[in-house]
Image 1 (cartoon, rainbow, N blue to C red):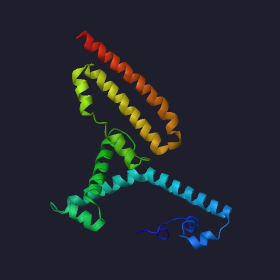
Image 2: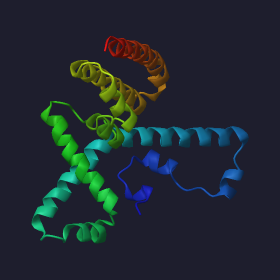
Image 3: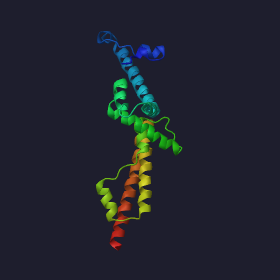
Length: 202
């Protein structure tokens, strides 16, 4: 397990991450204890935000490295090697390989992955799936395919926008999400009315 002292951190940050005992902390005044908590909370939030911003790039680099290693091994040896050498679960191996594959597709479309979390990368790469009920509705009622594609593209754009704000600017998420979702609801009502009108004409 990696400890703070094993990392290349500034001396001031290393000092802040020394694991103090409860006995030591109980000797602090109320104000000192409040300041101690606030400082560690800021460090934790900053560290988590920084980790999210480099998550996609790290996952892609690991995935590409795994691909390179896989090419050197004989058939059937790769997953056993990854589990033994890096203690990766099969699901973790699959995730890293998928991140590398998805990144290649995005980069081919001139989409930058820098600054994304792993979740953000996968959200940008994976279109929302239609439920069985949605598929039946599309079969039954019937707006033209081009119209459905346009609406699906608009919904996908909205999901990508909301995902970006949630990952990179969570403090702005509510301000952005509420009006966007209100617009989506209005569009949904309009689509249903048009679909009903088409069915009536039939």
